Length: 516
RNA sequence: GGGCCCGUAGUUCAGCUGGUUAGAACACGCCGCUCAUAACGGUGGAGUCGCAGGUUCGAAUCCUGCCGGGCCUACCA
Figure: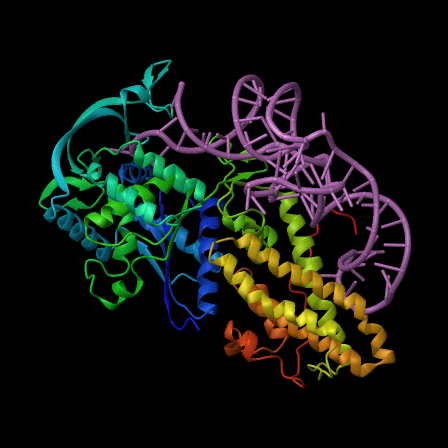
């Protein structure tokens, strides 16, 4: 038993410059599935998400909108909270970098780094792009029509700033040693290799303060500077568990995080800077940083020019929440890039969900309703066929658990659906509609085996399609307290239990305008 | 420029350290069933394994070159 072993999982905190879209939904849903899985498996989970609210771009966007940065940030941050409700996200906390607990924690982290001699005051000079909020090397600039530009095409200007620096260069060897000793600390493997070769290429000290804008956390002891947004943002993962009070029960229980899920674009911040900051402050790095891939939409990259960012609300309104969650987790290996298309979405929804799983539940429950007085039937002696089906269902937890330990959602779901397929074959082979006339006792055994298989499937799919799984468990009259993974083996369906009238858990998607 | 990855049935992809007729899912054809959300089950056809060489008794699987596509290469969710 994994009694109460803590599990801390985080999404990135989302930058409030953008409205929530498919990409944010993806990261968040993946974390939610993992968090729900671990809770059902008996772990004590803390699942954190939130918003990143400082920086020059936010300051500018607020000015454009004619409101204060705080008002601006309140508004967008709320949109992300709306998204968690929309997607039925089970986060235990939602942190904002403008909150007092965070500001205090970041300043404490700064002072700790300073005390340990990891920070020094220097000068930074380079080509700066306001739009990108980034400095570029001479060699990175490209020639444009109006002079030299950033690789992104943004205008650049020569800027010299007094900056505080973090001694990142001093951590190169220790980072390499860490990743050698912990080969799974960055996943998937290809990302780890990228990170390692990046570190091997040599690390320069990192500028960690800015004087060109003020919407940020002030540097303790020097109010001309605000703390660089990444040092600010990354720290949310520890300020949310109580840092700087590193002896608090919350902190010692949950830090280091078990897994921090990020998009592949920000893997370097999380796998190079972040562990360096932590080690420099005397703290442990996260156990794993997992970088997932990017979605295209109908074969095209999501971009501002195409304006094809899909709002999560639109997806849920069109397909329903559970189908969207299922699609995101089933369609491609976590870590790979993929394409979101209407055609593929409907294929999964009607194929996997409605036809395979939903219809299986329906045909079994309807037969029970008609032939067993609407009560869980009492089984007789089991045949080898019955036992084979039940064994497959019972073996599923271990298989799924193994895949979830590696964040292989698509394999976990594939394994579950193999049993769905097996159950459908079993229905056809046993033909309970024939048995209802010829051998009612045998029919009851068959329907019991099917109902019990359904119970396993419903319990195991809770992390992925919580709404539909809940409906199915209700229809099987499984009590709320018997829905965790221990109940799989401990609480089989009780014959005689009255079942409610069955109702489709995954309605088919019918194209608008499709003839009747 | 440097580093890394990929190119396998109509489509999306599996094929680990080389070894009998190259697999799955979806789509398609045929058959069965009729409990069910016109769902389910069975069965079948379909591939020059990017191209050209090489190593080997034997390569989709190793090596070289070429063509095509992608990713990383320092402060941008």
